[in-house]
Length: 537
Image (cartoon, rainbow, N blue to C red; front, side):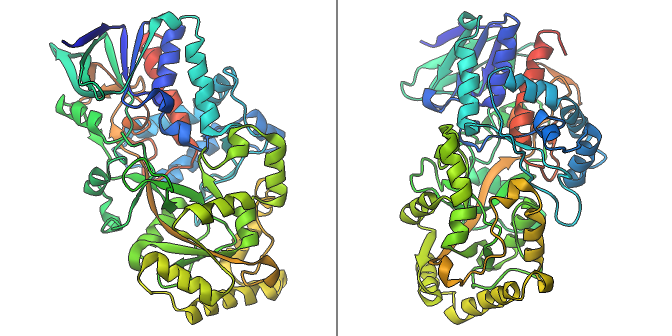
């Protein structure tokens, strides 16, 4: 016999968008049923695994650093990377809404729930040939995404109206129920027991993520101008982010848009302890490393360097032989600059160990490099270029790296550094100089470090694959987060938030993102859906 539950609002998905919606609904006395397919330990979804960066305009941290920002400038930057078309009316409106509301409705809302941010704002996605983020806007949560979710889940647990919330875990929602054209609930099955669930409510909020957790579905919607998807592709999305709820909405007549627009990362490595098919980690690549193709040749003529344009990096790698790359560096560069994006490998930040964090910033993080070298099949360490090439070939089993070619590529770069800054004539060195002008980057970026410097060895090479992360399209929604039908009118009883809704409007980011916008838009769309349901939006 099926388990039956009735509530005012049913939320499908326990990520940050679903949590934000639940908190807002509880604030207004609504009864909430939140259904998540994962375990209680993983409550919070991919946000809990994330670095915890949030895009904010006009924050206190920016003002303290004398960073002059405005919604107008932020919108101009947003649209410069989004490349929205004339038909993208809702994505554009959502972008305008976010840049104008993120300070008060995301940043201040989080601070009121005891979420703290780093005093230094990070400057990412600066734009390679055209503006990206004109100013730093990436606000790191102290505690990473893990701390962010701990704060919000704690706010749920200790909410004054906690008795109005019911949490269901381990349930796979496989149907949306309707009556007279109105969505009235959903049904599913508990995967451990086989028991069925029937959930009824006055409204259903879909907050179940995107499609990138299914590499099969991702490949089906692969962006055609990129050609064929890589044979070796890593999964950095949520393990249950398979787009099934979007399929259910589409069967009800919902409009699903832009699933071919996806946000992937260029520096993925195999997770040493995978919990999903082809599970990967996303590195923050060292700026001072040489980015080389599968044949051990430096990629160019524009060398690859992080912090400017992630989409450009992915596009260039997809054009390379093998569609994977190597980053070659030495121990000094690796300990100073290498990081893993996410909460799992950032112990000092996740556990809020301030002195340890400062020590790692100043003196580097050799323990991280040692851990990666010991645990990860993609990381090799060697005392000479010849040994390095041998180990690189052993990783791939392809014997594509010629030690002589690899050494010549490295020596050519090192020779440019040795001439001194007045004679530097290399775009990577110019970008490094640019990055070091900003204090947030200077402390984590080497000052023109030669790769073959005997005092900086051993040598390190990291094989990097494209890592699937976010689908930028999804269920099209209006500015109340109501799911829209094919005729452009709202589907009665149905709302969509977060990645399921393309982070707003079925594709708020267009083709690219300024980073920190995934968590921020998930919070805002979740809150707006709840406000709509309580008559406040």
